[in-house]
Image 1 (cartoon, rainbow, N blue to C red):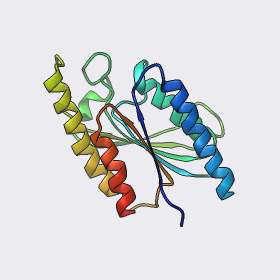
Image 2: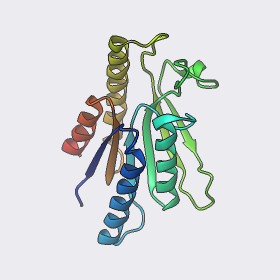
Image 3: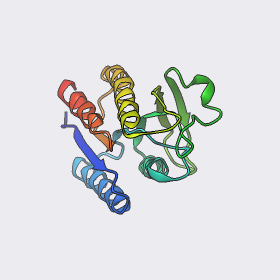
Length: 178
């Protein structure tokens, strides 16, 4: 059994594209070295598809690309709320509890993507303190989902998207106990 690779990247908007390329090349190189074609990848981050702008859009495109390569991708994230700071339709009804979706990317030969949406506190008018509470509540609810994922087949890569540094601790937690 190989070791789990943990990749943590920051939200410096000028570096997102470069960092996504680095992640892509790292996983591709890992595949060549291990001589297998499919890797299990876990992305933990607050924003994801269907966000149309920002890091949610970038994360969605990155996971689509990884699934297109034949990787089995799982995403732990919150319900879509950005940039309106309100949970978007049709997610609002179920946003107070965990929800699982299976998304089939646009590419024909892509693997389906498992998406676990976690509840979190969402302020109407974000301030510094309220943003810290938002990040903390997402980290807490994502922790319980990551604990559940410990009992499934092991992930080869864990990608954590952080402005919320606590999410990096979730990846290290998973790596330690798996």
